[in-house]
Image 1 (tube, rainbow, N blue to C red):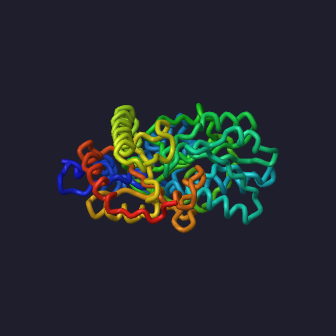
Image 2 (image 1 turned 90 degrees about the horizontal axis):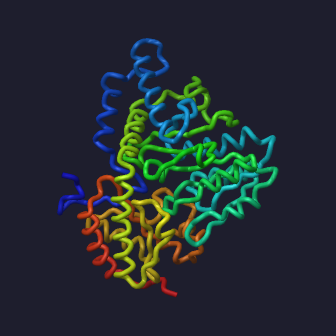
Image 3 (image 1 turned 45 degrees about the vertical axis):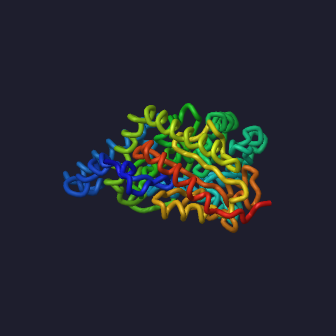
Length: 393
């Protein structure tokens, strides 16, 4: 029986931060610790067996995004992949231009990479979004100039769940001869992605958001893309990311991807139904509730909402829910860009300094049941009654 099916168990509703690892993924990884534990760079049979697993895993993951296996470089996760993409392209194209365009709602690892590049003399343009979190593609078209070398727009936002129009963004970049990087850590395995259809030159993906292990991710780099490695050493990963490969993580990553794509359509329908049920309940039950992000063009297992006038009580609400056995989040689990606890994403969509502190993110996935969601709804109603209107205007 799943934990979330048990009356007295805790319910985990923070899948956007990380996910439980599927037992089938763990099972796939175990031989890498007990029998196929060789270094893939070694020439003996232990090494060649490990190399075969590495090759199979790379091919398996690449096919799901429409890429060739030799275009996929394994990393330690989304943060490294994003740093590699942003800084690697910047360093290798500095003689061609110094302008980089990023959306204002990107993950902190991209925004902070760009902040650091700005200190090194690069020019960063921040792409605005509308009240639902969609990037302004007309602004992008006008912002691209002869000095622009890279555009970075995420596939779906980690805080508010809005799915960005990356096909349009990619086409604009392609037509203007500018590289397009897309951070797909939140959307990969949940909605279809095709690097060719979306004209993506660099794509960031990782495992721990799709019921896979932590500490493993990948960066798709389109053939012919000029990029400078961040790590130098023994020449692993086609010389682009030197270090001994995390074989257990890579094998687990491949298995997690396989399971996601096998179950994607069924899960999309199931999770979207739960999301819509929760959203409608909140809007019907609470007159002061409002949704952050688009109500339909959002990730299926993701809902971000706030209570008007109670934004300053968000942390207290989360702690109350945690005491009652429910784990939810206030925006991103790894955000530091906000000031005084405010969210840069909520600020970007037009919320004021108090409202930007009030996002409540409920995210769920493979092991979340309807029964668990019903229990959460009851707990939310009870916990909200204990809040006080501190920051009302």
